[in-house]
Figure (cartoon, rainbow, N blue to C red):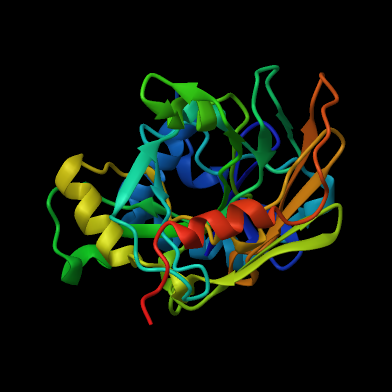
Length: 303
């Protein structure tokens, strides 16, 4: 099932090129925030799914083009991003498993604008990632059970500022946590619709020019390992979002006026955002080959 939030954060289900209003499944209930509704949906999935199936089967829906799609998890309690989690098309040794937290207030939805802050970054990059959404509380889970803790998957853009120095070097906080730096969605696709999350293709276009095009099979640490290892560090709650990393070989700069589009066929409509830079800075167009080479050089594959 492909779940969306649309217009004034109404619950919807995708049906072809239409969206069916599914708010009736929560008739009589009040939610303080849209995130609360989504968490109740995830935690109550077994009871709610038959009602959602009925709404989807019977509802005619309205054209997707007539609604405003929102981020499907507007304010999760945690946004965890795996760091250096790809083998760069098999060209490097696996990095030590690591991650960073991205601010929930960085989340925006498709059609919105990512604004580059007026700071001394050397460049700003796009990073398209497959993200999974936690379905039930996970603490110290095994890899064998890990996938059963995933509710679904969604598109995720980890927008990044480079060259901002923190107390002990490059800072993930200064590089990753700016407001609007976590575009997500538009659909949250339930895990049962994804036959193999380690065998899907991720693509990104900048102003319709191809950039990223890589398979999730190139992950150094697969999804089941991410669930297991991250749950040993912090309890994962229903509705938490975990982004699984990017292949850096086709990474490129973003600048004012760019339109970034991310596509994963299995996840429904693309995620598309505009870039705004009030400072109107410019960087070389195309793939950042210097950074791509640096990632490989940090741990080249042994012959």
